[in-house]
Image (cartoon, rainbow, N blue to C red; front, side, top):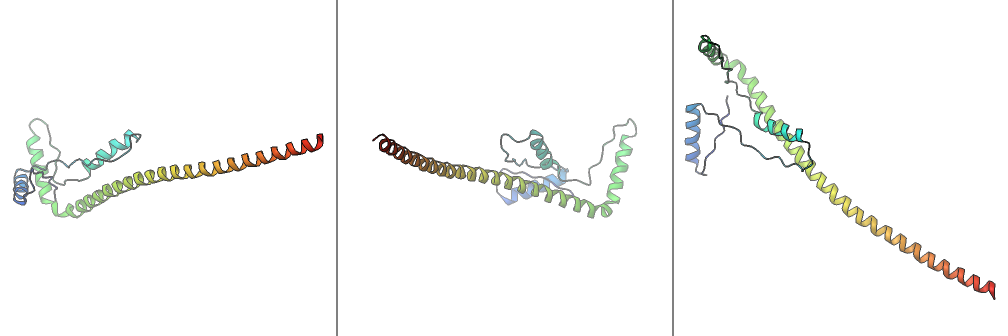
Length: 166
């Protein structure tokens, strides 16, 4: 099994089928579409770079061979690799399908987790700001109550001083 990334300029199904036919005929597998990852500006650059690699290279193509560049033997080595791959595809197909399925699921899980983390961070920020406003209001109420109590104590103290001096 191999994965072919096909892109067309229209929404016409026949144009898509023609593009698929042409890609399969010419062996052009294209490249995976880049899915933008929504991260905050203060995210770790290593995380951003790693996510880009995950999105670009999660699929494994079992038919890819390492092209030899040895002088004189390159053609024979490359031909031998192709023959071995074609003769043993049935043996490795289930493992490749499982690996590709796992990698695709893992990429989707990472995307979901990052999206949920982003949403939770936004929600925490909202709750903190709402809680801060409520906390400030409660503190203002307590300060006002203390000021009122202080005013009453000053009045009482002034009354006691007048009564003592009289």
